[in-house]
Amino acid sequence: LENSNLKLNELNEQLALLTHKDSLTGLRNRRFMFEQLPKDIEHFQRNRESMQTQGKCVALIHLDLDNFKQVNDQFGNSAGDSCIQQVAGLLIRETRGSDYVVRFAGEEFVLVLRDIPLELVAQFSYRLNELVARTVFNLPDGHRTRLTCSVGYAVYPLELLGGQLINWEVSLQLAEMALYHVKHAGKNGVATIAFDQQVDAFEFEDSSHVEAQVERLLSAGLAHFELKNSR
Image (cartoon, rainbow, N blue to C red; front, side, top):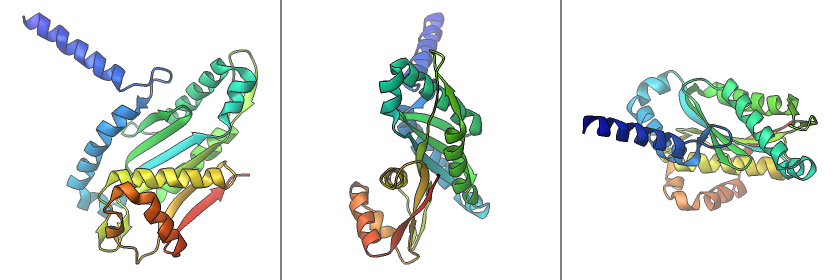
């Protein structure tokens, strides 16, 4: 019976690993992120005073490869898969052991950087954008190609009047909105959303209408996109 329990535990561990892993890249998947991120936030909150004294935060970086359909159309799906694997390798090399990289969707990735100094987040995002653009991707048939990416980032917690954003889902949505802004602005760049000092955290209590709330703040001049395009 004891052996059976041990085997069952091993199988459960293997199953958990499989359901938390992306089969193409070996990266973590969305399911892992949505299970792990609340735990990371809870850990941050428990150590909040110490973390903030050190100027640290949790950073969420959303990266999407630009015009990726062209790679599949021109070279085939196996070439596209190879590029995604190579980008995954690049992202893993650039992150620390305490961070994790998630294959969020087809050619989209999310990086969760735990306990990172706030002033390094923008710098790190720019570096990823430049590294992808500088990389020559070797394809299975011997061809080579270049790619660019669009990056949106946000941090948790976000300093706002009357408190801070307690909801990590809001930070994730802000990173995604920043990413789409880069796409609309011509791609191949990095963006984040900056808020005026008079914006109250109360604005974001309802995380189901974040986009509409941000649009209103943008229109009122109480928020703006900080965008850096690479050319």
